[in-house]
Image (cartoon, rainbow, N blue to C red):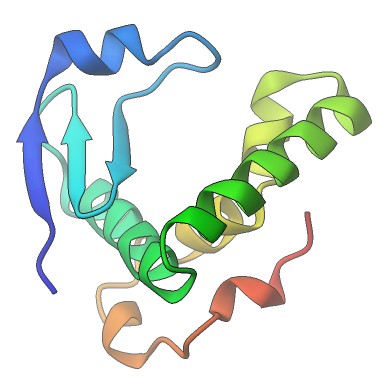
Length: 113
């Protein structure tokens, strides 16, 4: 599935309350503040696959859970964000152009929050 991309700098700025957002995936859309590089688009498309696997709503529940646990553990918003299991997978594989063709379902489970 090819994601629907939208460039909306005002929206991403408004959503940047917690952390600085340059792009966000809200299934089935990827909303960015500017034209995305191949790597950023790949990162966000990994999130599309993760969201589909978890029927979207469970993705967001686990995402918020990981983030809140990280905030308590690290007391740092950026560290909490980087330790979300979905972000770990997306950052680890964003430079791998073939990743999505070879990715196993639920690969995010390999990462610990």
